[in-house]
Structure formats: structure tokens, C-alpha cells
Amino acid sequence: MREIRAELIKETVKDLFMKANYFAGEDLVCKFKEAKKKEESPIGKSVLDQIIQNAEIAARERIALCQDTGMAVLFVELGQDVRIAGDDFNEAVNAGVREAYEQGYLRKSVVDDPLFDRKNTGDNTPAVVHLEIVKGDRIKFIAVPKGFGSENMSSIKMLTPAEGVKGVKDFVVGSVLKAGPNPCPPVVVGVGIGGTMEKAALLAKKALTRPLDRRHPDERYAQLESEILNLINSSGIGPGGLGGRTTALAVNIEYFPTHIAGLPVAVNISCHAYRHAQATI
Image 1 (cartoon, rainbow, N blue to C red):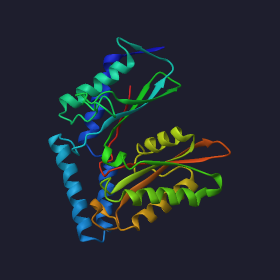
Image 2: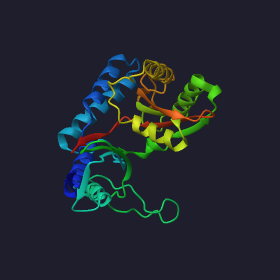
Image 3: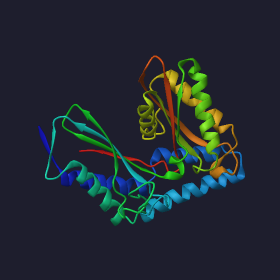
């Protein structure tokens, strides 16, 4: 049994949320530059150029990529041979989020009661934590500061098995077209297929943590990702919603076994600030 101090968990979570908010990944910047070369719309090119400059300034000045610094979402893979020492795991995670948003001058966007009071918690806690127990003596964290301009464009549908591939394509493409300019394109589209209703939604969220230069290992799903991306980019929504070819940078699909009577499909969209950072301790 390996002992990991809660203080290390707090510091790791803190560093990840600050890093994710300040630095666009190399894969993302490469996608912006590739899109700019291919974009036919002059306005679209201009928007992409501004997005690239924004990423450079954010990294250089250590300021947020976007004014919406997101709700703190964490995917955690906890090794079953780990013992947490020194404090409660959840408190350590929330302490890390609290310090990241306070010390990093990141906007606090969480309200305590979603319907009535809607009072800001003042420190961007609590985090939304998705915990998975795995083999080993390590803890892997993936931090996702999720902005709600794009989160609000999420959707889910319980298809019938007979609707098949066409039903999935129609639903995913229709969801992105319905979102239009609201999620700040060019977007990344996370798709979850299978499981139950809530499992599909979780898969769609987790799909947004995959590097943009990594294809799905199953060629059938990789082909489906490519087909849906082409359909979305034929819509003409374009960068910033101002017209052009680059409405989406990627479509990432994750799947899970499901019931014989169902075909759950969920769509979770990320704005052009495709933010996530990971570490293993």
C-alpha cells in the first residue's frame, strides 16, 4: 500500500486548473494553424488569427484563455493500492480548486443553489469529481475547467437500436447545428454512445479530454468521427459563427456496452478554448 499525502493532491489539483486555464495545448494550437491555412472565409481566417494570438498572450502573461474559467470538473483514476494520508480526499481536491481560482485570478462561477438562491460560493467549489478505482498505486487526474457557453449546448437522446449509425449522425450533427454560434466555434464535439443515459453523458464529457491528434483506435468509430466532422464543417457556421469552413476542429467518440433495447447518445461541446490538463502522482 502506497501512501499519498493529501497536501500533494491539493497542490496537484491547484497546478492543473491554473495550467489548463492559461495554456492551450500544442495539439490545439496546431489545429488552429491548420484550420487557418484551409479556411476560405477572410472573416474566418481573421477570427482564427485572433484566437491564435489570444492563446499566445494568455501563455506569455499567465492570464486566462477565456473569461469563463469554467466549473471545475475532474476525472480521477485512483489506484486501489493507495492510501490517502493527512486529510480527506474530497477536501484536498476542493482546497486545490479553491487556491487555483483565488491565486490564479480566475473567475469564480459556481452558485450554491442552482434554482432559488443562486449565491456565488466565492471560490469555484465544489468540484465535480468522476472517480474510477483502478489497479496500481498511483492517482491520475484530468482537470477540465468547463465553460457553460458550450456546456449549455449539450444534449442527450435515447435512440432505438434500429436508428443505428444514421440516427447517431443525424442527432450529433443536428445538435451542433442547433447550437450555431452559441458555443464559440470552432468547437470540439464529444460524443458518448452506449451504456445508460448518465453513462453516455459521462462518456461525451470524457471524450473532450482526448488529444486532438489521436484518432479513435477502432477504425469504424474513427471513420464515423471523420464523417460527422465533415458534415458539421459543411454547415457554413464557421469561426466565431461568422461564416466559413471551420465550425469544428474534431469529433471525439467514446463508447460503452449497452442494453439490447437501447442506443443512448450524448453530445458535449467544448468551445475553442479546449482546456484540460493531466498529471499522475
